[in-house]
Image (cartoon, one colour):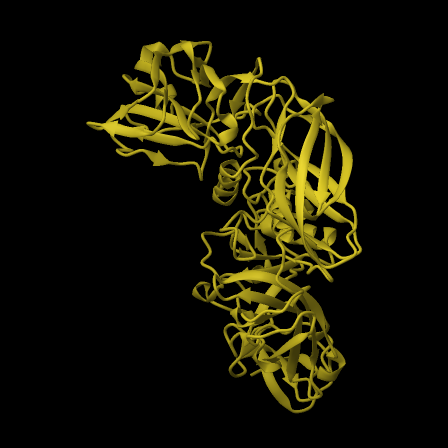
Length: 606
């Protein structure tokens, strides 16, 4: 689940900053293991392991590798042939690791495998691999999973080959990073760079907030930056203090937020950014080049979280809590869609989901992140889904989108409309389609069919740290009395299909499409006032959600339905079970009967 960010990190490192001349006398460690939190990885077999990381980027040229180390749990008693090495490529000769650089013997001491190169190895290529090898001679607790890895993000990655399991070099960087550490010499005491930033988007007559990713390339932690930037021929300067210094590890990253002055005319402007001083020390690096694109109106992106859940699933309360928290924190911008499986709120089978759910609970944001945990996101702990959602909201949307919906005069149909405004002329707008999704809030009921299975205990209070988690950390195996929000009731994707946009659109001229839902086809009808419409702008070239909007369904008084249980009676038109599911015909016992007036009552059918 690290793949999207590992890819971004690698892309950034490949396109990183201008090439600099390295002439410093400092030393710094380069590792993905800055937190010291490691996990064990292995095959559980007696075999030979080769493990490597990849150093990539022109900024590394001229630096020297002096020491290599990695935490280990095993001792000399259970391994042999321990080596550490540097090579320009990962290759095999007769199924054995082939090193075209330098190899030295490794020493195991106090839980660390380490080696000092006899002569420092100068980095001359854009890509280089550093690694270690060992042979398992005795299978024991410390050698079943003998490789230390971390979940932290780093372009160093994790590559592995073994004599019985991974018969070819395998790139496992999408899952983990190696905990290996490399000591680099030749760095300046105070130095930093930033990731390539490409095009920055802003709105006319408004300051533009920009977030750069700064990376420490010096021997000291970075506590301040003096910088300058140019928009066209206009130069501005600024200063940034880091409340928490960027750690003294090579490539350690931090966000640097700055605000660019407003530009009063729409257009594309050359943009450059220069790091003038690091910790007050003058820098000689060249400017980082990019582009500033100013719009009359900058499209606002509202990213969409689609969650897959079921009341039978004991870990699914994580998704319930996440939706409630995000709805509370971002009431105007967060859009949640909850697809229920095999419970009383199920309205479609799993093969009708927009994407295949990898398990329950799971979630995806904008149909572009891959399946993640609906609470942790791509992390193992913490409320990572919030950060992932916010990151997706930073992706530029192709158009603004708004939506509205209401019951028609008969109360039997919900009519929806979506309006898109593109910031520039387009001749390919037909690549975008609109999916309307009908969503219900405050669904609830009595009985076992509405009870949520729960695996969380009072010990989970620190893990699920929000007040919304209170019902699930009381030690109850089933939680009753819940009110479910953001529940998907229907989608035009499965009924009338996606609404198409015209090929040609004119800058800032609204484009409108429509959709509708048959009220009698809604499987769960509890409260006509608590339906919402969500409009999704779908990019049909890859199926991702390009933007979203939400709005309440108005005009509920036209249906005559407030809540189930109203007592006015006239001609019956529909029957529901006590869970609010529509029946083809009344059944013996209690039924919810809906009348032509729209009112509903509970009746006994004999």
